[in-house]
Each structure stands twice: as C-alpha cells, then as structure tokens.
Length: 290
Image 1 (cartoon, rainbow, N blue to C red):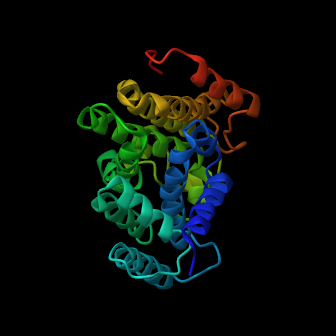
Image 2: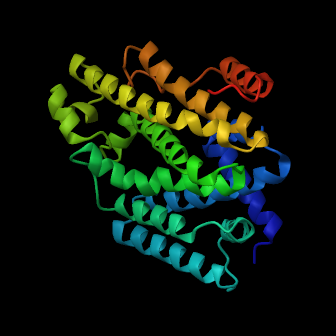
C-alpha cells in the first residue's frame, strides 16, 4: 500500500516533471495548499498517461485501464484500500475540501473520449470535450484556492481552464497530429483552407498560419473572460494564478513571435521571463488585475 505522504510526493514529482509552467506558479501558494494542487494534477496526469500510452498498447486495453482507474477511485472514496500511487492523495484532497466528485467524473469521461474521438467538427464540439478536460479542473481548484464569492468565481475559473487547454492545443498541433488527433475544429481548418494532412505534414503554410492566428485570438478571449476571477480569489492564492495566467498567455506571445509557426520549435517561455513574471506577481498590489 502507498502511504499518504508517499502519494502526495508522487503527485508532486509528476507535476514537476510534466507541468513545469503550472508547477512554478504553484510554488507561490502557501505550503499547505501546494500538496493539494499537486494531488489534482497527479490525478489528471495519471489518467492522461493511461490514455496516451506511447508503447503501442491496444486501444481496448487502454480503455480498460482507464475504467479500472475510475472504478478504483470510486472504491477509494468509499474507504476501500487501493494501490494506485496517486489515489490516496486525491481522495484525501477531495474529502478535505469537499470537492464535487462529479467534476472528476466529467474529467474521466473526457479522457475516455480521447480513445475514440480523433477530431472535432466545430468549436462547440471541442468545448464539450474541454468541459471535462479543462473547465472541470478549473472548478475543482476553486475550493483549494479559496474565493470570497465562489459562485462569482466559478465561471472565470472555467474560462481559465478553457484558455490553458486551448493554449496547449495550439502549441502542440504537431505532436497531437503525430498521435492521430486534431483538436483544432475542422470547420476552422476548412475556413482557413487547411486540410488535416497539412497539419500532419508539419508545414507552416500561409493557410496554417491563418488557422493558428484564429485560434490564438480565440484563446485570448477566454483569458479575457477569466481575468475578473483572479481578484475574487483568496489573497494568498492570487500570485499563483496570476503567474499561471501570464505564463500560459506568454506561450501565445511566443507563437505570435514565431509568425504563427508551431512546427519549427515548441513555443516555450524563456526561463528569465518565467522567473520575472513570478516575481512580479508576488510584488504587485493585491488589487491589481492580470
């Protein structure tokens, strides 16, 4: 059996290894909050790894593993001992903050979609997927972060989840295409004169650049809608989320700086800028919005 401390440490290591931008932001939280953010990240990353196994595991096997993980999570919530390294920390976090289990179930449903859905016809279709893969994570985070008006903060938290997820999709167009997935809506591809094969070819044609520019604008609208939620957060949590907001937004800046070419190199924020953003987020007055 995995001890509770070992489970939290497992989640922290996962977060540090795979979520560098958000991990840096999380360092700005009070120590007692960090482990719970790590736990939620560990839950999502563990499930994502079951789905995105790169070892030629058959789809049916991956689906069975994901269902098994969901079943063990449900059992763990009922007090049944489980061996999954991430689950003790997740269950402890769910109980401490009275998290809505429906949000985690919605997330797992979106992970299951990744096993069968390879593309999305419209942005509304993609939003349905992101409701679980992104928005639900935003609302799960709220009780941990704290907000003086949780009801008012809920929609901005959803929008921030959408913004982060769409930023990842823009940055990772080539990697996703290599996995046989296209997360940018097919309607947008058609309107910009892009065929799915163009993304798989990893060629930053003028049409592909127009497509990426369209999605960057769409992501920035989600950031705009998310911004009013940051001042609603507990003062001890604002620096963390403000930093994440700015660093993820800076990924879009890097995409623009590259002329909307997301294939030449992976859009990353230089370390010097990452640290400067984190420092600024701590120092600015609490009343200032992103």
